[in-house]
Image (tube, rainbow, N blue to C red; front, top):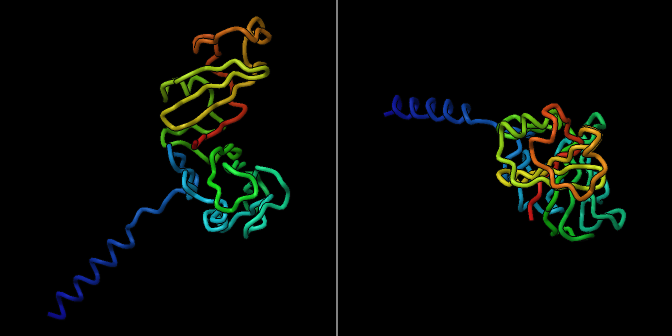
Length: 184
């Protein structure tokens, strides 16, 4: 009897030690590391226990009446810029996340260092928007938007605000200027 209890304890310890650790830099449709689409502003300290959160006091209010919350790592590098759905409300949830650090990657390996061809080869592009200084690539599969600076485009496409862009017009090696995840 004691031998079977001892065996059970050893097996339990082995299984619990093999538990897969969550990747703090993994981007999925509803998660970015430990942050998810229902995380409230008041819970940011527990989602980023080793990082610095700026523009938020940590209790119920923001330091300034601004809707942005920045998350920095211990080395002072900007990781994420978060936009809550309501200003100065600790129960607000995060609706928009700008990915600033290249360590953050989607399950398929896309990061801020990726090029347009990698996005196109990896995900189905849902929409391409023509803005003043950028072209925005939307990927609904992961609630993402990738902005590419128009300086990455051929000269004849940079200044026409009325053009409707096709994926074939964007150079394969065009770099990502901004990378956003939207949770509305």
